[in-house]
Length: 595
Image (cartoon, rainbow, N blue to C red; front, side, top):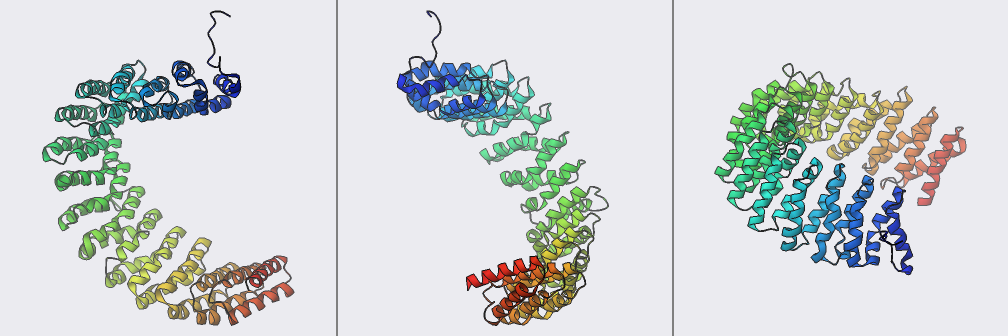
């Protein structure tokens, strides 16, 4: 009919009927069909040709922006790689139309995909294209009534500023500074969020001075969601120049963040304190560390938690006796009874032993041991658990005498702690303690704990003890194992509780992996063979599974192998329990196959 608008699919060659279907499906009611069609935009564009793609397909795409988020994200991704559809880089600007529309939508993931695509396209544009088309797009978005458009455009300034002349840079910066003072807090927040990337592409002092003024204004914003980004920007701007004059302009903002009325801003300051120390190296002792000490005593639990977690990282920037002495009062406040929050104490406990390699043996013995002993007796299991997890750092610094006299009594207590996770953490520390204490001292002080762990009511503890024996065998040797571990295993193998007997047998299994032939043949194989005759079926089929695993050990050859195979044949022929027979037969079959 005359006057009726023609479809984009019209006049597509008959041989390209499938392409015409894809074009029509761009408006289909089924979202999956629309999504499929969007993902095939390259095919459509190739069929239409470069000119019709620019003049018909892209305007058509601008009209179908009101769609599901998944479809729109896919559209942005396709347009990002669509330069070849429109005739190459000279026409890259023609792809910005639909992307500009996507920058206006409410869903943030769609807007981010659109701005990412625009930043990729601007790299392919000529300076004339950027000045004429891309800067015009930025101007439209920056003055748009919808705040979503103004949020989106903030992400584009850094990409555009790199590609334009000085006069246009001034115009773009004026737009950016207007957004820094926008009525909508979310726009100001995004402007603050990209301030560091904008600063990186500016090279003139006058421009940086203007940016610094915008930074100071955003750092004093009435909304804490905007002020919280000031810490990130202190780091970004501090990296630009390390001159005293430049850094002296940023440090007052950093101090204001540490004293901000919002705990979220102070939290961000405490979380980023290590990066601030790295950036402001010459000002760390005079400016950053005093602020950090205040944050350790902050009124908010969350701030004290994150500040306590950073204590070792910060101390590394000033590993002196004087700083440690200034730190001690704050550290004492983080322990019972002055610190009431167990979460703060746990955060501190997890980080405090990281100070020992920084300050060395003498300062650790003089100042840190007492704090360690205080935390290890904390009423909260979480605190004790965090501390034990870092025990290896202390063991590597202090001497054997200090370990024996000050710490071992507390460690022995924790080995019997009512919380099974604490007992588990102590077990994990045993190999490192054995290494630093030596065989004689370790055996004298801690050997008795292993029998308790082998009969622990919690399986995870018994299992950890079994794995631990293997590591101790590697550290202390075969003779130590034969003289100290084997007697304890033999005793547990006679225990009335079959679960403990299974645990002892699993210990024999783990030891077999690293045991030499004499230890294996004399002790470990006879243990398993004995358990294969246990009155409880669960013990016997676990014995069969243990034999199956032990047979793969290189040391299990010759007499040991014959003894294990004979035991399995006996179980297969004589045992009355079907499960025991099944596992014994499976083990025997595998052994026969391997042979």
